[in-house]
Length: 103
Image (cartoon, rainbow, N blue to C red; front, side, top):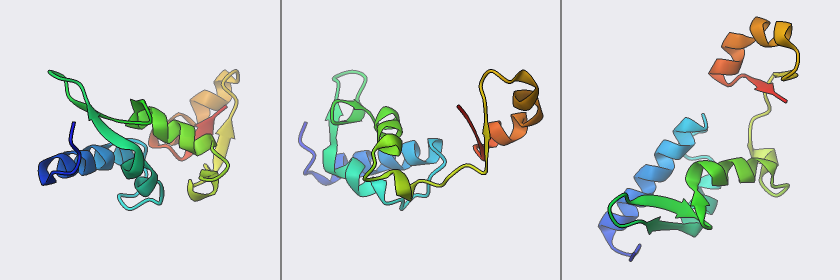
């Protein structure tokens, strides 16, 4: 689909903003430019925005692990092992808020 018309550009921008919010990142986070560069509208009845052939959410996860972009992501204050149930329970609220990471 043509991404040069104003309606398509606004739709892509809105979808990227929502994806950044779901990932708990700022509206103007540096990876926004990376997402906008590869964004395209796909689908016919169920229209969605993809980036490099994957969903925006999946692309954000990929960029978190990309050495070029990893430094721009905030580091979680706490890291909890996924096999330690007592620590998972203790830090449940932090995990839900995104301030603690589960590995």
